[in-house]
Length: 257
Image (cartoon, rainbow, N blue to C red; front, top):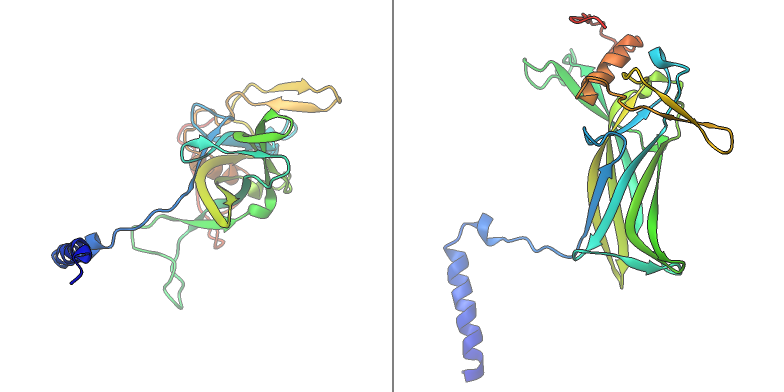
């Protein structure tokens, strides 16, 4: 045998012995390739760490709307922000939106599907509502010829804000990708946006912009609620929106407002 091959053969035999004495779940170690790291920080309610939009329907009708949610945005590759020229494609950001609806769970009388177990009280139904939103990143511009992957993500509701059925706890999924050579590198982050019909806070500020239109500020849109899911369910009930499957249900104000 060629003496130069002895170290390689010995290493191979050691590897075979190691794998033979190791459970398969430990032997198959995943290999991780390059990826982007995506961070988003909501600016609407920094205490609760939520994005918030106010449709201006229901008990707060006529008191202003806020159909934009903003999030600080940072995308890094190997720990550093990306920089690209104005002549390059740079980082692309794609947003998906998923509405969380509550369903009054009853098993289908024919199939029995629906209820997962007897104690299940409400089921969460996920609905893709991405067509009702637009997201736009605004990047840091270190010079007029370059962009850097540090900035903000502006999220807009473009649906019918007069329809209270959009009141919901909504999931925002932010996906970023960039092409380096012939490799497409991806990264994904999840964020939280609370879509309300009206503000639960008593104070609302209106600012007249230079073009004469109004911008509204809601210092505490969720009021004393700490859960967007509960608050959305409360507001939908106040608006007469029943749970799915057409089942009537009763609510009771333990502590009337």
